[in-house]
Length: 107
Image (cartoon, rainbow, N blue to C red; front, side, top):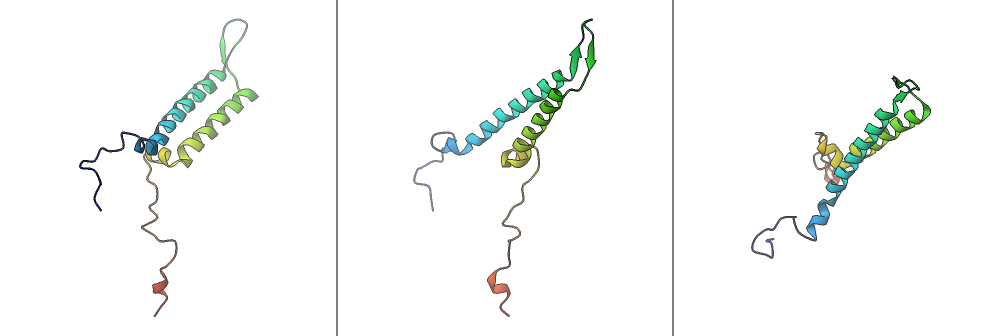
């Protein structure tokens, strides 16, 4: 069936742009993950009274690192846009059907 308009305008205008808005929210979430990683890195270094920086690991730093890890896992590994932007392919359900067709059992 053909398009009702003469030329295809793409998904650059409303309302079709809303179908791709999840990508922009993914990029925003990726920036937030980078901010969390920077904060966790800064939390690993403590400055004592003499002004020397020392490596240290406290409970708060562990929480920051776990927060960053689980946020990144949720955004990158679970979301479909994160999988494709990380370079992994998602399985195509049309290649392997979940069950045999009903005509396969008829002999």
